[in-house]
Image (cartoon, rainbow, N blue to C red; front, side, top):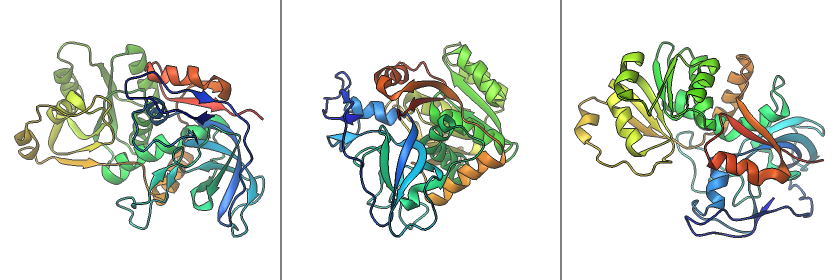
Amino acid sequence: MILRDIVKPGEKMAGLFYEDIEIPRPGPNEILIRLNTAAINRRDVFIRLGLYPNIQVPSIVGSDGAGIVSELGSDVKEFKLGDEVVINPTINWGENPDVHSSSFSVLGLPLDGTYSQYIKIPSENVFPKPKHLSWEESAAIPLAGITAYRAIVSKGEVKAGDSVIIPGIGGGVATFALQIAAAKGAKVYVTSSSDEKLEKAMKLGAAGGINYRSKDWVKKLKEMSGGADLSIDSIGGETFNELISLAKPGSRIVTLGATLGPVSNLVMPRIFMKQLKIMGTMMGNPKEFSAMLKLYENNNLKPSIDMVYPLEEVDSAHKRMYDGKHFGKIILNIPS
């Protein structure tokens, strides 16, 4: 699926075009993968809406994918033809585990992504597919999984017994954060405007949840949870101020998105008088990606799958994400 156009922010989504192109050939340290499945991220929709920086066209979008090794570069020794693999979409993280390098990028623009039958990828970004996961489940993990793992484990330093608050449950990163925190022994509390999504979150391991459209929901959530040792914010806006209210003294807030935009009316004394630790995070390094996969294998975890579409119906899949109807990951099956 090739993106040819750029739209101005606020206009309708740019079109994706289904085209035949030449199969890429891997360089010495690259691997050619025949993709079986891909997954959708909000990033893909933002690119089509012109809301992502440095958009370059034409480009094949898509950051998540899983498939079979089809061809090996001359210097690749750790894989063989036919291996089942999953892709780490963090490109050129660099040597510093704490922050990405200046040449860092995310697969799927500017590098051609996973809405395709074939993709060539640096061998360092290829990992064995977890054996207990289906192709759809394997494709669901990469971008959201590594983002959530770094937020919960590396930055958030979650501990057994911690009270963790995750607003806006239903999106990919939020559902992964819920699973990872619960697997680490934390008590996870979530919010949503949908009672149905709250019920699904309970089945996924949440200890409690509340509809943020209800009266005095912040007060009720604080009573329910006892306050947060750790909050994971992908929303920004007024939600960030509410997480400050919910935070215990000395607790942590990890921010990784701002779907509601900037934070207004931020009262700084509420942060420093509580001795809060506020951290930003984005994606994750290769060691974290490996550790995230092992956590899913060791705990026999499976990501939450919302719906599966054929690649040709990507417009319907993107609309479902744009409308916020999904819970978990939306998957694309790649045609043979």
